[in-house]
Length: 316
Length: 292
Image (cartoon, rainbow over all chains, first blue to last red; front, side, top):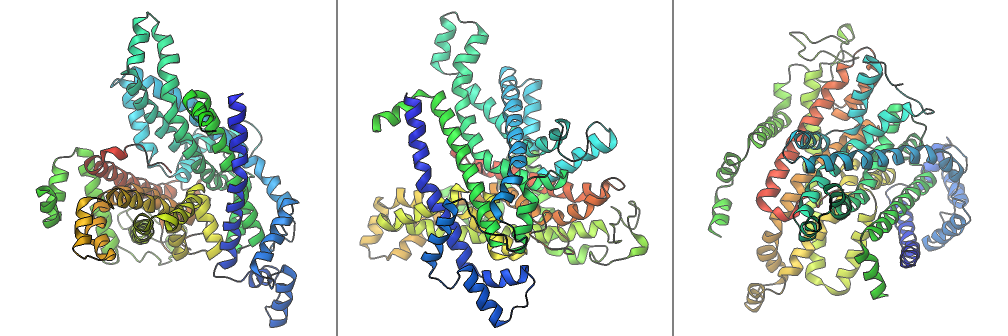
């Protein structure tokens, strides 16, 4: 019950947040240095005569006061109409929804990989402090924080596809095509998380409740799982929330290397062309994804740590 | 206090003392960083070839005595292009950090010093900027401003300043009502003077830590955006552009993409090592907190 309340509260909190984000995105694009009407004419290959500019301005509603423009846009957006791409002359939202699932799939697999590798790795390093696994994690962490993800992607293709022929170099369809792009995206977060978990497990291990659990005669495995790991995971959950942005950004870059049919190329060409309706909708979608992911992180956090959800209850 | 005074008097000596007391990794990184800085400043005089000189007769050469790292698909010398790339990379980092610090100090300082409504408003604005992932924010800014190196620098500055403003604000707030500040106010010092003389110096060490930790991150951003074709435009020699140029030759000349990537990787690593060392020295509390 408390979890449900907590979730609903946080979901309601999203509404003002998205509203503010949409105002910010809209205002910054409109108040930016270039004229959307000019960009519209450029992208639809109409020579920018004064008459054509005037027509474009009227058609796009740019002659109205900016608040009216915003509420017109918001009204359309609430009916899931995000306008028409200047360059492609197609509605924006269906295109974005067409490309988004592939991106989310890749980013999601990268997230699973981050957690699935960093947690055992961090546990192993903490268990064998200063031993071989610990040294290994230290090395991975050291390399990981400095590795450009797109370069890592190429190195993987070179090694695993070209030299060894183990994995297909690009495309989407089978699980084998997911491994390399997901690894390239996840490597940095994975290495940071593994080191973080090691440190936080060692910290928790020194605390009194662990000592007490051992005194009660609990087995080493039981103590590690339910008394050390559960507490030590909290910083990992926070860090993962912060890494989600990095994972999404990384996915946009990595897609182009592996010919992954995600939103990356569509968005980059729109950004290159200054295709306003697309940039607007794309940014808002990214914010929505990011904010929802962080909501999930918060819920997991509250689930792991009763103090959080009870604290919320007391205040409410 | 005496230590601080000495450090202010002899920054070079303090730097060497710092390096002397550090491990071999920090020293190697410091040497690497020095090489990078020298290359960034003097590359036009050191480069063996003109980095943009197209010579189709000698395209895609393997490394030899004249071209130490070989040539690319237009016959340009790779080593020269790598050297010229340091200037773009370090230059954009330096300019963006300068803009970020200036924005952070001005906005964060104003928020902390004025307090009340102004502070509330400024903090909500930083909240918005901190909500977005930095790369998505930078992409959005480039969409707004257009492509090119200058806009990439502006985009990076605008997507990072909020963290700096936060730190400046919190330090200013914690010091605002200390006795020595009140004393200098009683002595008739104006707000600007108090800020510059008493509050700003207290924020600098933390800003320095944050900035050195961010150097590698910003280098990766500049290279990544250029790799996508949104930052530095070809034929300007830049590491991300070079990796993008090399991608079509990955089957035939994989070394072409190894060099610029290695240069980027080693530079980011050197700056990260230095950043960690500076943090451990100046601000041990910041450990593991700055991830974005």
